[in-house]
Image (cartoon, rainbow, N blue to C red):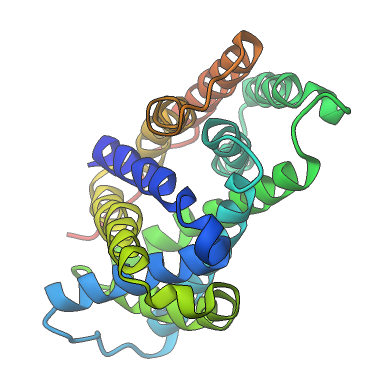
Amino acid sequence: MVLASVLSVQSGAALATTLFDRVGPAGAVFLRTLFGALILLALGRGRLPRLRGERLRDVAVFGAALAAMNLSFYASIDRLPLGVAVTIEFVGPLGLAIFGSRRRRDVLWALLAAAGIVLLSDGFGDGGIDPLGAALALLAGCFWALYIVQGARVGRGVPGLGGLTGALVFSTLLVAPLGIAQGGSELLAPGVLLAGLAVGALSSAIPYGLELEALRRLPHAVFGVMMSLEPALAALVGFVALSQDLAAVEVVAIGLVVVASAGALRAAGAPAPRDA
């Protein structure tokens, strides 16, 4: 489930970049969340779960995290190669694992990941990557960490895909004003709508559903270790689908982050409790 989710979401991200010239990053996010929500609503026969109190708050925070994560990430891949953006973004889940651990060795994993980021960015100097793109990727990583925490809470508290559906609907409402303002009438073009449907399925409905089910079955540490493959797979998808070549030093930098992530996440903690 996790591996299929990673491949699906990165393929969807690659497809989404083809929409940027017509509807902008925010317009692409709006189409992604809109169609993702519609697909899940169709699977649930148009029904949203009845939520109250703490569960309603959890779903609302989950939806807000999705909106913020996707907006900042799409803005970053408008400025950075896909593999580079995902590598920087992965600092969020990595930081979540390290701060949740009391092992001194995790400081070494953090330093290794930091070395990879600095190497990747060339010290954020004139010859390095776009600074704003890097900042947006880091911001997306912070919201990715929140997505993991809230995804686990929603997965345990709301049965089936009801919590995810509610979160996507709320996320769509949050993104709509900016997405419509940026995309304008182009959002109604048949080709754009078809691509948006594919992005919604590949980047939202399929991977989020798979990850939610995986979080119900896997300890957080195991889930995180498998997700640590995402920077490498993102670079591969960017190379194959978008012809985004990476220099040897960038490949080494991505490798450092992947190794650091796997090492830190593997020792992040005991299996998370799961409801029967």
